[in-house]
Length: 164
Image 1 (cartoon, rainbow, N blue to C red):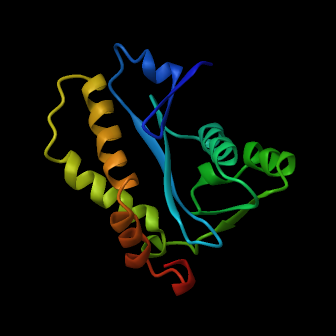
Image 2: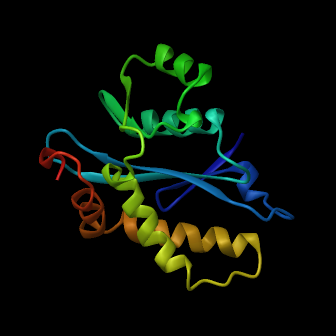
C-alpha cells in the first residue's frame, strides 16, 4: 500500500482514494521523550472502524518514527488486545504495552487531544469526506505543532508529574 506523508500525517492510500466514503476514524497518541521530555503527536486515519489490525498498523508507524524502547499506554478497549497485538509485541521487543486502569479516561492525555480537536471540528461543515479529512488533519496538526497545547493535554491528565 502506497502512503503519502503530509505535515506529520500518514495518510494510507485507501484514504487518499476516499471517493464515495462517508466515515473517517482516527487513532492518535502523544509521545514523551524520556530524556528531554519532548512531546510529539502521531495519528493515522482510516475509512472504517478501528480494530486490532489498525491499532497494530498505528503501533508499527510509531516504531518507525521513534527510536529506542517504546512504551505505549492503552485503555482497555478490545481493539488494544488480542492476537494481532501480541504477535506485534513478540516481533518487536522494543515495544512494550501497559494499560490504563479501567474506566479512567482522566489519566489519558489523548483525551485532551480529542477535546481540543472536537472543539475546532464542531465549527466545521464539510461538504464531502475529503473536506472532512482536511479539517481533521488541520485540527490535529494545529495541536501537534503547539507544544503548549500538547503539554496542556499531559498536565490536564492525572498522570505522574515526571511526564509533565
